[in-house]
Amino acid sequence: MPPASELDLVRGTLDLIILRTLSWGPKHGLGVVKWLEDVTHQELAVEEGALYPALHRLEQKKLIAGEWGYTDAQRRARFYRLTERGRRHLAEETTRWTRYTKVMHRILTVEVG
Image (cartoon, rainbow, N blue to C red; front, side):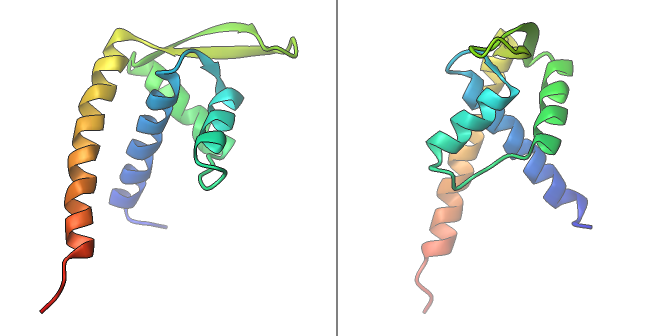
């Protein structure tokens, strides 16, 4: 089993990905998966076993809100949207991750010697 810090990083990353996905408008769970696959050209996938617990966790934190509706195929599904609190959190986390990735880029590309 991976150390807790690795699991926390994965969870935090998934939460940020979901919030960013919903920033484009409400989506149901499979809509989130499809958007992510499209944007990443199928290089990143989220398993349903990780997605739905993350959606519930974000809803409990009031970062997203869900309501029942129907898909284009007339299937009943829960549609999620960002709350105002979720938009603020997304902006804060985006700033943090942008700084983090810039620092990591410097570390990984520094010339030794």
